[in-house]
Structures are given as C-alpha cells and as structure tokens.
Amino acid sequence: MPSLTVPSIPHYTLPPITKENLDYADLPIIDLSKADTSEGRAALARQVCDAMTNQGFFYIINHGLSPAQSERIFDIADVPFAQVDDEEKQKYAGTMKQTGSYQGYKLRQYWHVDGGVRDQIENYNINRDVNKRQHPEAVRPLLPEISQLMALGLELPEDTLVNMHGFDTVGESYVRFMKYYPRSEEDELNSKNVWLKGHTDFGTITILYSQPVSALQIFGLDGRWRWIKHIENALVVNAGDAMEFLSGGFYRGTIHRVVQPPIDQRTYTRLSAFYFAMPDDNVKLAPLLDSPVLQRVGIKRRFEDGADVPTVEQWRKARTSAYGQSELKTSEKDKDVEEEFINGVLVKHYN
Image 1 (cartoon, rainbow, N blue to C red):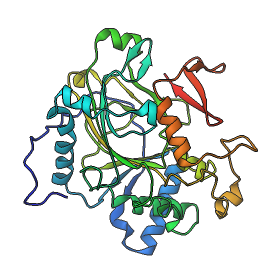
Image 2: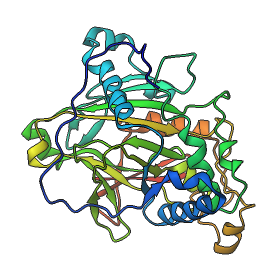
Image 3: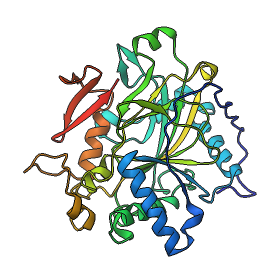
C-alpha cells in the first residue's frame, strides 16, 4: 500500500452522495475486527453464511484499510482513463471475444445493452500476476479471509476455497478499474435507463470498493430491485456463479445491474474499483460433496444430469466472450428476461 515514496498522481475527487430517498437493500455488515478470536470467527462465519444464502451481498468494515488508502485506490483507478489518451488505449485494448480473457481495456461501445444502445463504460483489467502488470495489491490479502469465512459456513476446512485460488497458478483473478460516463437522453430511453443488464458474476466472489454514485442495484428474492447504499471506507462483496456451483446452490450468485443514477448525480462519471476472484483454471465447477451442509440440505444443480461439468477456464472464457456480444432470446416466462445457454447452463440477463 502507499508509502512515502509513492508516485505523485492527480487526486480523484469522489462526487457527493445522493440526497434522494432511494429504496436501499438491507445488507449485512461484516466487521472483520471481530475475526481475531475463534469465537469471533465462528460468529462471522454464521453471519456470512446467512448473507450468502439470502442476499448474496454484504459489506465489510474494519478491513485494515484506512480512508486515506481507499482514497488512493480511486486516484490510481482513474489513471488508466484520465491519464491515457485514446490512441494509447487502442494499443492495449483487450480481445475478450476472441480469447475469453478480460485483460487490458474494454473500450466504450463494446457491449450491446438493449434497444440498439451500446455501452458508455471503460474497463481496465489487470491480471493477479504482479509480474505481468503493476496494480494495487490492497485487496489481495483480503481474499483468504473472505474465502475462509465462506468455507466455514459450509463446515469445510478453512483452506478449502483458499487452496482453489492459488496466486502462483494459472488463473484469471484480476483487478478492474471501471468508469461509467453519462449517456444521452435518447440512449437512456431506448435502454430503459439500464447501463449494465442484470447478471451474475462468473467467479467465486467480487470485492468492490464502496463509492458514492448510486447506480448499483440487486434483485431480491421478492422480485424487486433495490439500490446498494454507499458506506464510507467499506467493501462490498458478492458471490458469483463459481461459488454457486461449488456450493451446490447453497450460496447464491446474486443478480445485480447498473442503472442511471438519481437526478442529482447524473452529471458525474462513476468510477469503480473491483477485485474479481476466480478459482484456478483447472478447477472443476462441481459441488463440494464433502460438505456436511450439502449432505443435509441437498444440492441444487445448474448442470443437467450427465452433463460434463466445465472447468473454471471453460466457464470464464465462454462467459467472457459471450457477454454483450451473443444473440439472446426473450424468456417465454418473463418478457424482461433474456436467455442463452453457455456450457449447458441457462444464463439469464435482466433488462
């Protein structure tokens, strides 16, 4: 993390929080300062387990990062966008559709959103291998702690999930800096104010630095979309497909989307910083059958019986190359849902 010798870069000033009265999701808050004792860890494991089986989203506080360190992350996150010109961005553009790998830039208008509207989002993605590119390391130490808590919820050894995320093995865990730019009124109308369709992430967990521009929403069990509230210097964690597959449906890959911000924030760009955790490429996405919990509650399979369970590499490449590029079919059950089959799994996108 930052020291006295860090490079000087422009400071990114985060926008003010919205004053609108939004319908916020009631998410658990995990206080990592309580993880110092076995009793505290057990209590946190129960709290995380409950969050992952219900909402699939939760906040983390007292994670060891100071407010100044979090501010520095946003300063760094803005550099690939504000300090790099369009010509140089093209040189480092990613080849997601061809390779199924989110590395380098995802430039604007790469994804189709809806109604002929293409996105106004820039990504810069950096592989977890620090020898390939320089990137912030602040979130990396958190992954083992979060994974341990989730493993405890399944009543498995604490290192079960950690061992699937080897930083020195072949895999695609990565840091993402993401910048959303305001859109035209015509694009908002044609896309029904949706900036990024409702979807599940395809890794195990996603860690997001909380930021003030309200746009992220989750789809609740009651069928309603609710906003994610900003908590100063908090991290927001959610589960993805790989976690749902490995836990036999016990933990939920939560559906979330990004929409147009409230009126008092619509002139601002929205800068985000993420860590997407993926198991090693050779891990089979089959349920962890040794879990006593799964033996008690049963397994909800996403793969058809007899289907060849994909590896992490197969799943991430298929999801990455298809997103925003493939032809989707409207669901027969819900006109606001579009569907596609990837590796024998029904994947839904919510408008």
